[in-house]
Length: 168
Image (cartoon, rainbow, N blue to C red; front, side):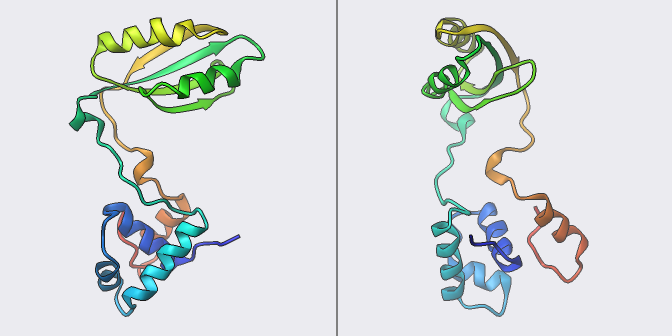
């Protein structure tokens, strides 16, 4: 199993800022490294499943400005089936099986509160096995998965004065 080193994390942090950043720019920002080395490291990170390079849609810019979390209580034995069906809806940006009071956790992106209501009552609520839903509007997003880095990488960039990881 490939384990990213400090140099890899520096590259990842820069790509987190701009996934289209050319290897030449990454190499220049890191200093004393060739663009070919950067490209090879990026390819290794991709091949080992550490990172993915892809387009991330900004939901607000394409009309999906309402964000909500829905927590679903499900009949015993139907949690995975409900979660899998919920994941098929394009409004679902995140679906996970949970433990505790809720069985399934869903993050949604919709165009309006009325669309949220219709989705929860007409689509989600009609999936066999759904007992109860609780919806929460999310008026402000502070951080999302597209900028996540492991805590040890962030801690290292804040505590090591010689470490020039880009600030995250």
